[in-house]
Image (cartoon, rainbow, N blue to C red; front, side):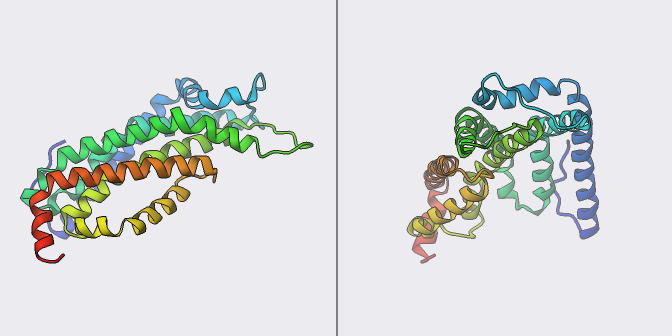
Length: 250
């Protein structure tokens, strides 16, 4: 999709926003229709770390209308995950005219970083978190309470965890641009690491809908690692700017 590097007036910005949102809507609609029939494959793939928890007991649907609802829900979320590169690109392209020429060179590296981090977060949650998190959740039941695992509810919980981790893994991009646009200088982030870690705990709690301490601590550990990695990367790529800001007392 071509991108106009010129700065745009307000009405042009609104037309550009409508165009980008239209493209995203078309992608989501077409993808959901296309994913409707292979939805059982994506459902089984998503739920693979969870299904074994119940042994031979199958997840159930409580009414006949849920068969269509669940299938469409799976198709929609599969489109959001698989189509995330297109969605991310459209969002980034909308903000491009507001960037200065020396800032536009970061567009493609940022795009690839965001797509890679999102995919990494989803993969990490699927391979490491889902099974452990749902084992903990199921284990909170007590004697005399019979669980009837409902397919739609469990899938909803699983996909929220996957998307939550995918979005939370965008942290390095956020930290990098805070320093690139001089919103928060490097040495202030470094000096106030306790505040940053506290915010990461809050983010970890908000991004884990199951409220499991195992899930929250796993996400917190991953975010701390990503934060420190982003700080090290910024230290290398923005070395001159960091040194200048430090000399100016920022």
